[in-house]
Structures are given as structure tokens and as C-alpha cells.
Length: 262
Image 1 (cartoon, one colour):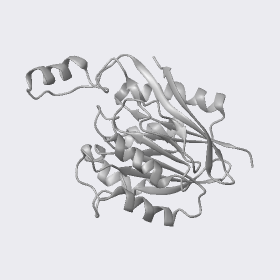
Image 2 (spheres, rainbow, N blue to C red; image 1 turned 45 degrees about the vertical axis):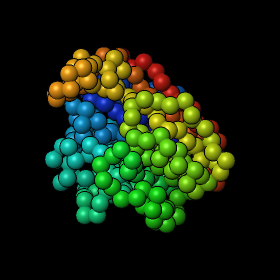
Image 3 (cartoon, rainbow, N blue to C red; image 1 turned 180 degrees about the horizontal axis):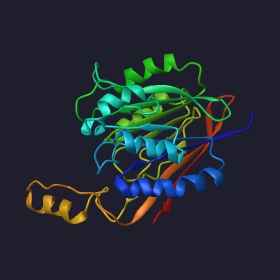
């Protein structure tokens, strides 16, 4: 079987991010012959959360699975929708009883099984169960898939790095999200797992991690609360492409993608 190509899109921020995906994704899939696409969509609804309609727009644009993070419940309608849409994940290690699933088994167009796991960190984040324990349990249920992609939505670099080493040789890729700033440590770990601490942000980069600069500066300058609003300019599409040997599930290459998307 020939090598497979996976694309993971960094946190999509607001309307600008959605437009960037719609413009760039079809040509990337065609030009790079991408087999499977995952995107973190938790900042799409005005910068916080995601709605049913926005998720559907991503699926229509060619995204196969959407992961989320700490803002997933900011849009109330999602609680009634997420149980009916297996392609939309929430962090696996949220406390028990919350709707939705934190991982799933999916298939490429060529019918190759791909597991996707959505985790959230504990350091500097809202309370959550241990992601290291949670992912070990999930992998038991994903034994059918040799190709497994893990989104670790976390603040602390150390926690993401630790997760990479924890899963090295057991999954295809460990990809960090949440900070919206791409890191330069894309690599293939010793066991064959592709890793990057943060994929970055698809959205308006004339901003402070997606929000209007003047509002964020006012908050830092005065210490007074501000109603943050999404920025509108400087659109960029940030992602990583991972090339995988489907016979082993090991990654052979990881490449950062960072292109203007205006």
C-alpha cells in the first residue's frame, strides 16, 4: 500500500479562519493528494466555541474530523448536537457525564482506518481528568487502526512534550493546539511518531491570538475587563502535513504549512 498523507489544520479562529479553510483546503488536498483532514474548530464561533452550522461548513469544505478544546461548550446548542455527530469530538478527559465522544475510528476514501483522539491538558487549564491515563484507555479501543492522530489541546509546552514521548511508537502523530502560535519543533520522534508542540492558528494574524489587538492591549494596560472581538485582517492558513506508512502506522515526514489566505 502506498504512503498516506494526513493534514491537520491549526485552531480555526472566527469567520476569517473559516474563509481561509474554504479557500485553501480544496487546492491543498488536490495539489498534495491529501487522504484525510482533521481540524481544530473550537474558536470558530466569534472566537469561542463552535456551532452545528459551522461544523457542517467544515465538513462540506473537506474536513473529515473536527477536534475542540476548552471552549467547546461556550455555544449552548452544541450540547444537543454533539452526540449525533461522531465526526465532532470534544476532549476525552473531560469529567464523566459530559455529552459527546473524545475519540473515534474513521476511514479514508480508500477505506483505511484512522483513529483520532482529542485530549486537553491539566496545567494552567480548567480542571480535567488525567490525559495520560485517558489516552491509554482510548488506545485499547482503537486497536483496529494502525494510524492514530492525537490532538493535545494544552497550554504548557512541557505537558505537550511529555505526551509526545508518552505516545511515541504507539500513535502516528501527537499535535499540539490551543496557544495559536506555531512552534518550530516539528519532528519525527525515535519511535516513529510525528510531533509538534503547536500547529498554530488558521485565522486573522493581525491580532493577539485571533482577537482585536486594541481590546487586548487595553486589558493588559488598564487591568479592566474587555469584551474581546475577533480580528478581521492578516488571514493565514497554518497546518501540518504528515506522511504515513500505513503498514506500520509510523510517520515518515512532518511538514509545517503556513500560507497567506486573504
